[in-house]
Amino acid sequence: MNTTTMTPTNGTDRAALMRAAKGTPTTPAQRVPMGIRVTAGPGAPVAPAPTVVELPPVEVQRTMEELLRVAAGSEAVRTRKLAEKITGLVAELTTRVDAEEALRREREAAEARRRELAEAEAELANKLAEVRQKLRATGGDSAASVSYGRDESATKRAAIRQWALANGYEVRDRGRISRQIREAYAAATGSEVTQ
Image (cartoon, rainbow, N blue to C red; front, side, top):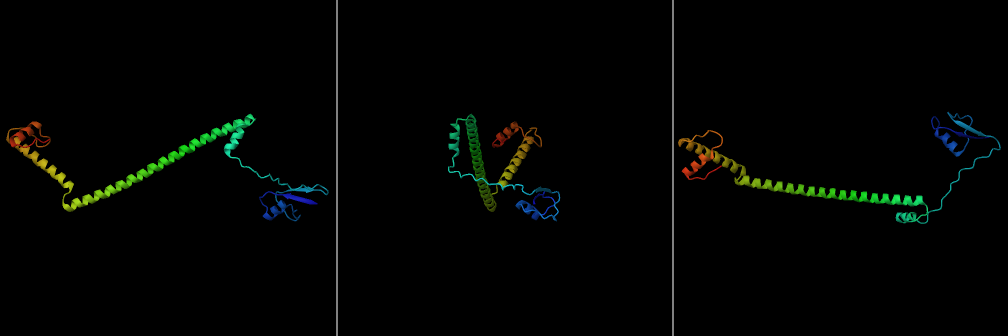
């Protein structure tokens, strides 16, 4: 009596599965949980092993262009329409890939330009630091000259206010001095009119 056992994978061991796959009957003492037992009686035909059909090797590999050209000239309408659709998709894909490549090249060029500018900025910052260091070493700091100009201007404003009060002009202790008073001071002292 030929017994083939088919069992699910839950609860069975690998050896039982291998025996079942090879067609070896399981021993009656072996317990097969949740299994399905198929028994064939004496004289029953044994199912033949499945045969593998080998396809002949493709001798000629067609290029996509050749395949589309042949399909476009086909007698079958469906084949021609499919060739048209594929041609359209290939054209769209080509356009998209070209656009993505152009965008990638633009991004790379922008990144390269940004790196160049950052290097130039760092180089200029280093040069500026060197110049400032040299100015400090020689005592010609630009910040000191700016504050000196402010002090001189404040001194000049104080002198204009003092002259204006001494010559009968009304002037406030703070704020802008009127142009009229500045012109009168310049005419009296022979100096230039300042803002």
